[in-house]
Image (cartoon, rainbow over all chains, first blue to last red; front, top):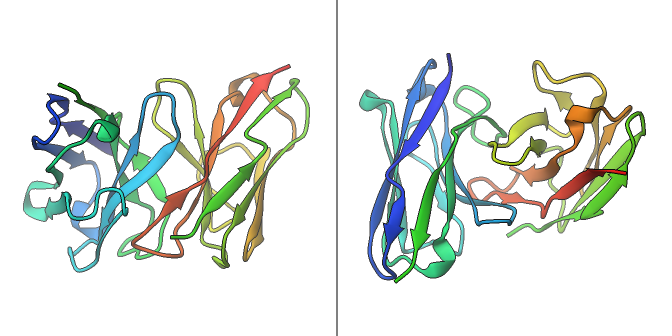
Length: 122
Length: 108
């Protein structure tokens, strides 16, 4: 079964850091681009960051650029999001998502995890 | 970044109705558009990719059309399980991708 499982969320004070992880199974992880998407409570979807299959292409939303770092470990079938200098507005459910096509560059997301909640509050 | 504007932001419809949701891009994105369905407390589900390709396992009552800046998602005959929020997403400007604001489909 194709599956993505996020972890690492929690309550954190403004200005602190948190590292999210996404464990992939059921598919050849290193063939696909991966992404982080977040959803603030009661709000819409916001793409956060994406990384190509070989980490050669990485992108960030303007709202997190310079504070968040995406990475992947293909040997461990894992995706990560290092979040620094967290703000109240980063409070959201964070999903990891898989690119649709093998070695896809411009692509939709066909598999999503269930998300991990990040709450930034003092 | 490319902006996506969905309309309407919400709609009320009855079972059996034909429903159309539109998504307009702030600049041309060819056919690099996807549609997702999200139900409360659940992760989004891919319905349509490349503007008009139906994802495997998605009922044929869902269809997508358009290219360039104007796109539509149509549900030909609304079913009870279709009441949800729908989002469009562009992937033309990879790796900086964007979602529309969402359209909530409610029961009339």
